[in-house]
Length: 78
Image 1: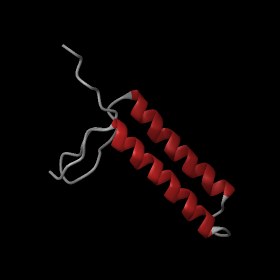
Image 2 (image 1 turned 180 degrees about the horizontal axis):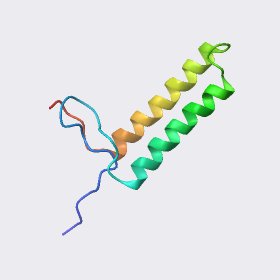
Image 3 (image 1 turned 135 degrees about the horizontal axis):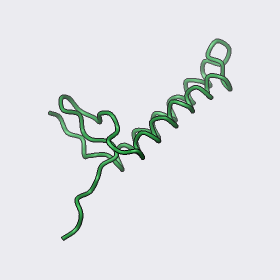
Image 4 (image 1 turned 180 degrees about the vertical axis):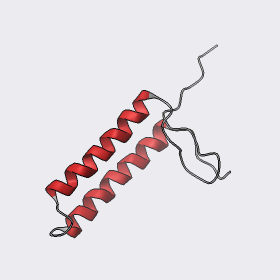
């Protein structure tokens, strides 16, 4: 019998999507995401380079959603 799969990101109790991380790997991903957002604000100051900053944030969010989809519990409406 195989061990149950441990999801990094559990599904939300209400609504659609994922909640807070359930494992240290998930917390590491979330901390890295937040750190990269902060770094992006330094590299692409929103006051001067808003378009570049928004593209950067969009790419980071897309990567986070892709990782949540791969390592998280399958989302469904609850």
